[in-house]
Length: 359
Image (cartoon, rainbow, N blue to C red; front, side):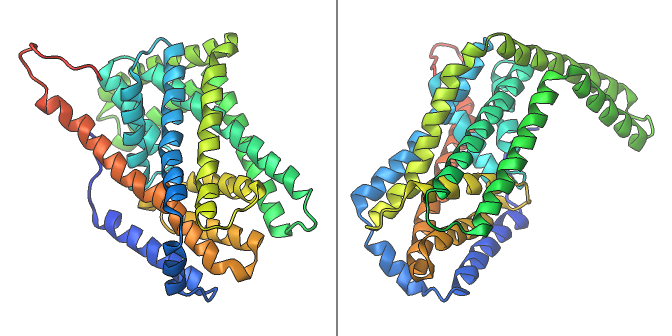
């Protein structure tokens, strides 16, 4: 059974609606007029906002080709188009399945292994490596934001402490990932422990299945650690993926900047750096809410309001909504199309072998 396909449940439908309502109630607490938001949104420059939408597609493209470059370094070959489609598919799963921080990565691992059986260990190494590189860039952007704050006349203590907190937490998680990636015996102990727990719960009735699962998992884990050690021996192979991830981040930062610009209200890059970095960290928290609705919007709005002042409440709410139309709802639509294309294409593919199509 394909466990990566999203299932439409009452929770999947209800929680996004609750999140949307919660966000609007949140901004109403700041006496923001909904009609003011609509009026402000109508003043957005369509050309500049279209550029922000293009940056949304560019962000995903650079992320996809960065992942493909890591896979290529591990001798796992997939086309740019497939990497792009699988990334959109993974993003869609990230949004609709309440386990945001890992579901998209599990989806990409599954898709590559389904296409090229036996590559799960290397594909796991690719997504973990990309996660490590992304977290390192996130920390660098947060530190850059802190340096920008010191150039301002006043530093909001709450914002400063929040940045420091996220910087420390992300750095600790990054270090933990690096240690686990390097220490093969740690992974083996974790796997053995989980298998023993499974055997205890089932009282040995599935012992043979657990033994088979343990063997396959340890084999994939060995390939994973060998791949990570290969990166350690040849760090130059990560130069291109890192550069592409930097372009991914630049595209990501350009989205809210262009949104504010479309509203004829250019903001400083300090606001963009700090807000985007904190929102990325907040979105990675697996709080079990499909469509990641509510918390990111409230975070963005609060940070914008802290930087721009209460008199800009309407503008901050409008910029938040317009940004999330690109970074959430556009991705839902495109990701769903990618998911349908990937799953339905094999159904319509000719079986007689006379026609083949390379993606």
